[in-house]
Image (cartoon, rainbow, N blue to C red; front, side, top):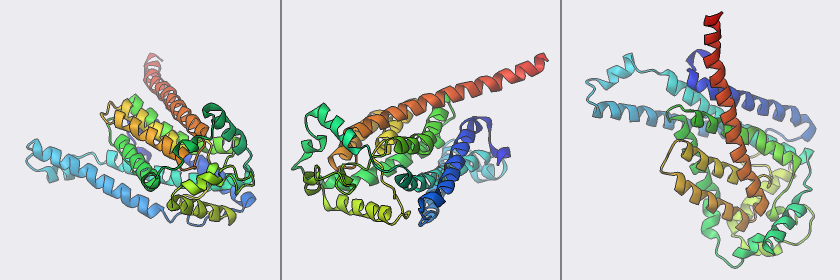
Length: 334
């Protein structure tokens, strides 16, 4: 694969491969100690590969239409003879890597539940109550949250995928590379490390982890579909098994971390979607609290993590670019 990787893709793809492989190895190493089975570990990957294939077809169709509009006499002949297939090959590999990375995250997320038992919920909940004078979800008490419940996960997932594929097929730049590194950083390092250091289940599981009935009113307020998803997650947790989306963790909020990452990414490439991304991010933040998936503090930490991840990506890329431009000069001087 290394012969396919052009310089601008290698600068971010290599650290992302390292982070993903490291995440997979840690998840594999933890399996005997946690007793978490592989379950549906690979079941979602074919679906992800299908999305990648469709995105690749869209990429090629875009270039084909672009050439036809430009008056190229034989676009198909151009594809056969002159088109550089390395870029779609590399980006297809990167997209598959991102799917594998997310699967590994789901695996290790479920495992961390058993090596770092929940202890932080009460403290995190009290911070939110101190800031607002009440548990923040109560601002939505009595509201119809059905639409919010139906869109919270689905809208987030598709917004995340659109942003990721947008970045993959965008012209190379320092900010683009930093955003891609940041994406893998959030799933591979920030999320798992944060979950391990500050394990919290979230308001929706507060009573189930033995902390009392503080959130009884929340359960009466949330739609049935939210309760069903919570029951699904708790079942896999109780069985020490791994299912699609399994694993329980409130701190940090990866929903809000990735929503913030979307805003940063659109801004980095100068997209007009930056402002809508901000609005969508705020919507996810509100929904995460109203539906009881997260405490208020979880989202703040997630947003900070996204900003930190982008800065780490920028530092790495700038140093990489500096090293690759200085070394040839030194070689000539020698």
